Length: 102
Image 1 (tube, rainbow, N blue to C red):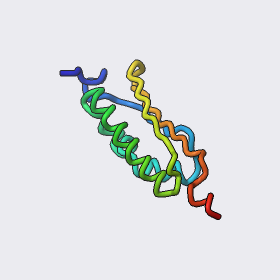
Image 2: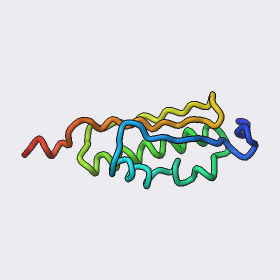
Image 3: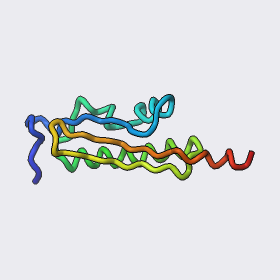
Image 4: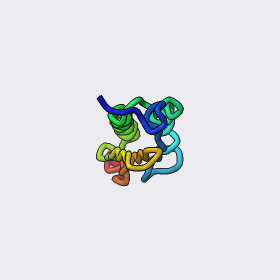
């Protein structure tokens, strides 16, 4: 069994989306469980990692829906700091596949 976060109320965290801006960043934040449930931190570090993995999967679906089929997302969870730091690193720089056909 893992210990609760330092506050005793769960594993508090800060979250950032890295590598994108503008409307894409807004959309990713809208679909993010990490952002939506930030005021309800998970009870354990493993719960925080599961939340980040869930966001990674959703972010990849958003990228593909926008034509970025080769986009990647890396969820980096650093629990050595208080609050924990979660960085969702998005690489979408590859041109959308549909543009190759124009």
